Amino acid sequence: MEDGTPGAVIDVALFRLRRIWSRPLRARKTADPQRPVQMSNVMVVHAVHKLSLDVAEVTVGAVAEQLDVDPSTASRLVNDAIGAGLVTREESEVDARRARLVLSAPGRRVLEAVVRYRRAYLDGLMADWDRADREAFARLLTRFAEAATARPADSAALDRLIAEALEGGGADTPVASGTVPAPGGPVTPSPGTRSGPLPDGGTADPARGAATRP
Image (tube, rainbow, N blue to C red; front, side):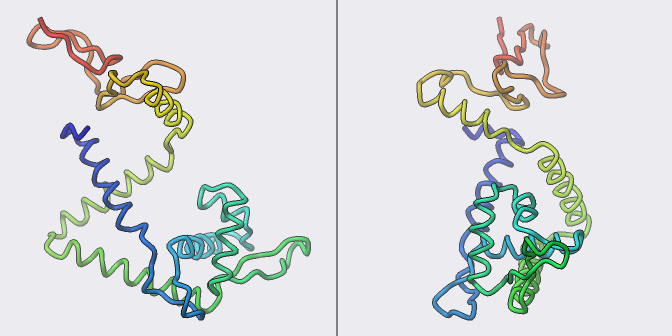
């Protein structure tokens, strides 16, 4: 499956990064020495902090939107962070029927420690990079993140492709690099995907992701 194209290389790199950065932060301890701070706790801390910069009061619903999870999952994650002593639930000053979320003193310290550690870690990874490479990487990664945010993955399409693969259908029809499977429809070539005659007399078919040569 690793065809050496930029998309394939990036896919493998992102998978490796996810494995590394989704590990529990066992080194971070809360007031309860038996309970390590989990990555999910840190995600909630980050979400509450970021939201507090933009809104007067942070709610579980806002955290759900920030983390892109359903309300029940957000409620569980928030309760875990509260149990870890990183977030507190206080009465809303706007609506007494709801609660607002606030970082506790330990939560603020953990946030500062994690940000400080992460930035030092990244600086270390790029210690032998020159300034131009760092700036180019920062610019391109920001652009990539913005594109991913604006166009999130289609989970329904992925579920359909997995179901087809399990049933044996579509197993022999690879998705070519530079194409995007459209839910319920044919593969749609992305901008820059070549179609029509090739220089050697063959024909490129973006719908099949293959080239036919004489």
